[in-house]
Length: 113
Image (tube, rainbow, N blue to C red):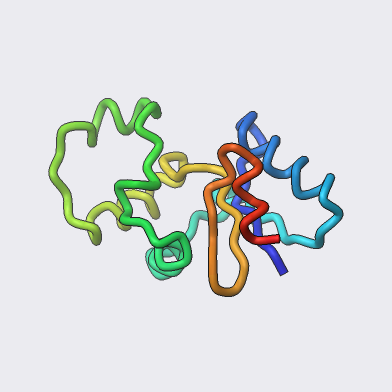
């Protein structure tokens, strides 16, 4: 079953959710701002996405601009930061057992279908 890591306040995340609904597939919604991901869950998502932590950071967020923009951090440091500041996570992320994609644009989700 698919999982969508979703922020209901984000237009792009809502578009991804609507895209999945329109496809008629079953999926689980994970509102990661209500229950932030653990460091282990972030590491697992990164493996599924085949990305480094800095590649899934929302650089337009104020917290990024004010606290992290010019820092040179390790992957583990970024994972800790994402866990403590889930607003920094790109969205939506859609995952299944062996692969995940960032659903921007929503058509990226087709890779999993």
